[in-house]
Image 1 (cartoon, rainbow, N blue to C red):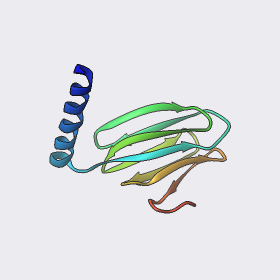
Image 2 (image 1 turned 90 degrees about the vertical axis):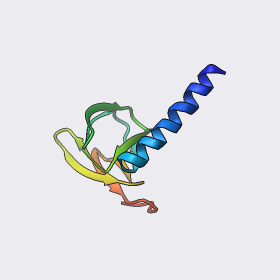
Image 3 (image 1 turned 120 degrees about the vertical axis):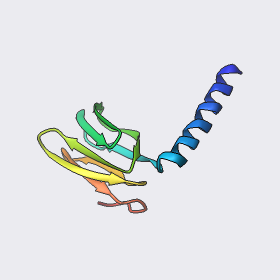
Image 4 (image 1 turned 180 degrees about the vertical axis):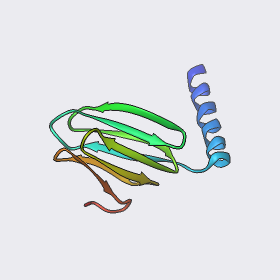
Length: 101
């Protein structure tokens, strides 16, 4: 029960921070390839490298515009509810509400 209360408090605090700091959105990153890929993600508030396993989906919390770089291949930008997909070894951005790049 304590854990649930802490989780609810954390969600409420993130909501308040989101209102004061700008809207945070969850960008979906899909690795549609059969290979693992390392992606660098850069936003105004962070810069990280992540390994995305083959055929997986992750949610990336982003404030403003995030830049996704597949090392040595290409870079795309995404914001809002966009989807970033790794297809055939390249990053593509799929606009929110669309099913194809």
